[in-house]
Length: 247
Image 1 (tube, rainbow, N blue to C red):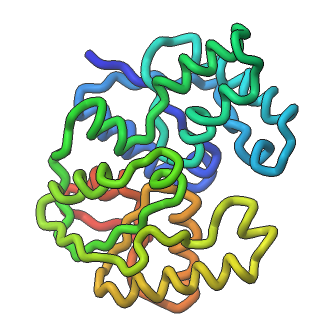
Image 2 (cartoon, helix red, strand yellow; image 1 turned 90 degrees about the vertical axis):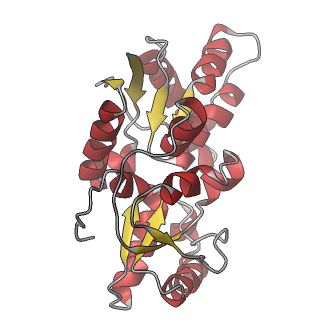
């Protein structure tokens, strides 16, 4: 049986517990044995993005110790957090050092969920059923940092009953950007409103997102304009067997 370590991420832990449970059930149904390192904490991305490298280095050391104890792949529901581990952890330690080598090893086996399903497990049909009109927002970190352009759509195209409709400016940022939304709230809010307008114009009843931060932002924007469109993490779509949960 294939094993994988579950990297739950901060937003996942605090705001999307049912989604994480669905992620575990989905992977187990696909024959993956889940390992949960209980000592895991934040990956350090907030520190790193705000220029506090020494603090992010301490957090990274803990992550590497926690997840480096096993050789199993590390799977997360967030492209931004996975991108932090894959691309920035090796930068935090001197080349050739034991920590740098460990960071490279951990980075090489850390995957965003859709990436893991499609590119590693070679699975495109997970048996999901979701008879609704759906549009897809391409999250920045998954798209630009991890280079994941087709993986989510491949999975969605195999969901029974799902009609995938195009989203205007699909690859345009929704304005969240972590600290960006706090530092530049007016700009962020304008970007979010533009994204919401495009979601509504798509005619879909559901917008699917692979990133918890983008999901929070877009869902909030839809609620602000009293839209009935559901914003859902792709994990919840892939775990659906025809039922719909309120957002």
